[in-house]
Length: 569
Image 1 (cartoon, rainbow, N blue to C red):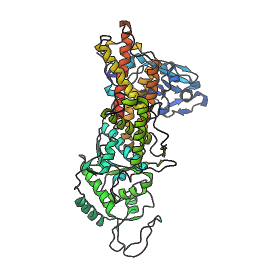
Image 2 (cartoon, helix red, strand yellow):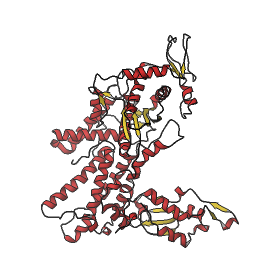
Image 3 (cartoon, rainbow, N blue to C red):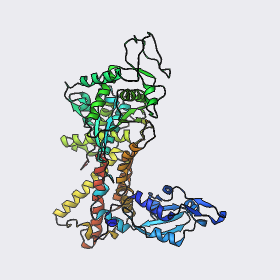
Image 4 (cartoon, one colour):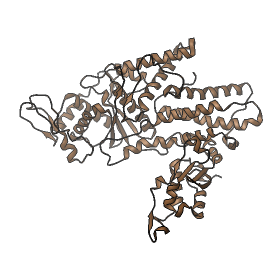
């Protein structure tokens, strides 16, 4: 019977922690004989080891403790035999099995027992590697200010590319956090017959809707009354132009009777960090109350008492959204609020709305498909493929950059969309389709009697996986993926960071592009379905187990982008 360590999914972070503990031992300091009776403080445990990822370095090591770390820990960087023995005999839940190690010029090299790792990951199926390592609890309300009336209801023809970026990030974050176990509620609710709903569905976004006659008037009245009774309300009777605390001018109006809230007092007196000190005092307008009513109704849908609200907004709208957040707080809402702020989207030489951009990319995708596949590009099947490929192109263009940084798009019509080369969404979807084509070919071989059915992984000898690309696919993608999914929820938990939160929203897209490059290189180099000879079947089946897990990995990652896999091209 296998022990629990062998049954536990292998993880990178627990392995690095265990290696650091083995190298450091239990003592807090290490005596440095070169400094008399002085003690040397250990370096940061997270810096003692790092995982290799490049194909070049993976040829001779999987983890490395740099020589600078060894020099800090041990006299002349010499690892004592007892410590080396402790490192090489490492065991533990989720820890990758160690095959050997040696100290070389760059540091302590460690090599994983790759056959054991292949067997652990593939023999029982890869499902544990395709989901977060742990399930979270709580409710997250994902609020997208770009979709709120201001005061008019936005349409695809008024939605800017910067605002479209926030909608796509909100949708992606919702999918990721739902996978982590969070209850996710999207805000605002949109009229079901609106053009915006149809536009979002064309991008694969299933945003919540309500009947056209649905209103928030009752909740708006409650919000307005709460603000009238707020301790942060300011009563102003003077007439004329007024400036807030930071010098921002507001319209000249009859101030007598106007409802005004001192937003600066809200975040100062409630100890909320990271808000703009120039928020000052704000007049409450109808569209603001409508926004707050939608937020109130969204949090009411949560099944837990307290929710975290994530406002996904553009940098141009950040100040306005901070005003909304503090108005909501002034009305009595106590939910945690974080702001994920997105950089602008630039289109040199051209100004496009979101609707025009989507139409441009769809036309370019259809043209590129016709050039490659000719007359086959017709009918509902190809319409569906072009829709998904267009959505993939748009998502990867707007999500592959760190959310705080600007995105620059090439929207010149002659630029086109290529179906070849490592260019984001199209390249990823193409390689996912190649995996489906491979297994379709294998199934046809089974039907013809060329190949037997794939046996269980426990019946295979995984030492047949010797090609460097095979280990790279397992070690860089299959094993680390679950920890990649964990990170968004961890970012929300960070305290003391202020109003803004930085989440690595670009990671899944970059992960998929990198995976596709390495898979494409491997697939072009290795003939997976070999001659139907019995002595070749073990290696072929080992490779099919690996590539089947890889196909599931593609599906799992694309699911967080709300992109269905393309099964043939």
